Length: 246
Ligand code: PEP
Image 1 (spheres, rainbow, N blue to C red):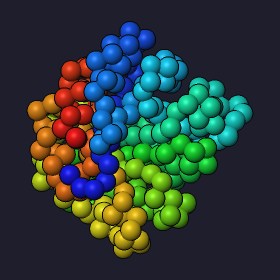
Image 2 (image 1 turned 90 degrees about the vertical axis):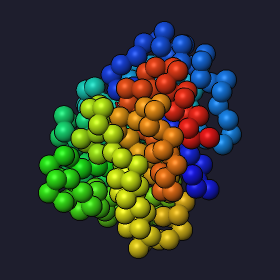
Image 3 (image 1 turned 180 degrees about the vertical axis):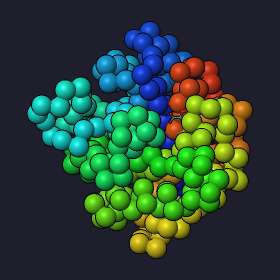
Image 4 (image 1 turned 120 degrees about the vertical axis):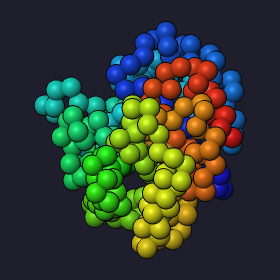
């Protein structure tokens, strides 16, 4: 683990309940140490409950618009007013199920920052893109869309999550070496713009992280913690993954 303060983030997707917020808060929050951050991304309906219980929270997405006739959307401004501090942008489920392009994701990234939410930009290749040797190109394009829209300095107040699509929710984790190689590629690519930003940037790994593989993944020099889906819904597993980052 590097000098960068690690983050363990739980993406609950459209899962959870008020009871689960209580259970996880009572088992996990007393164990949080200064050395690593824990963030939860509950469904928007549970954001207030999670904040009341003392979690550092974020939204799973934000609208690229300020306000208006956008039924069902999540407002960055209102999320901030509730007390959220982060937002995922460009999660692969948003890209594939809701058609979010790199350009739309770049606008969401900037809307989050405009409202003082720290964006966690999710990037990653599909299985067929990996098999055809396109991983680096795909990830670079996803990040460059943000740099072109908001400038390289915008990355200094953000986090990147590398989440190979083939590893999300499949039980197929990238090996520590596979993940480290892409994290290093991302850091080196950003260093071509700005070495300081690249060195400070937290890059999380996501994709079937569990309490048996988190130690080795988080021990890689360019992996600064994880974005955890399924295992973040189980208090014991989530806590044990958090402890891997200490
Ligand atoms: C995710 O949804 O971001 C994720 C990584 O899910 P899982 O850990 O379940 O693969």
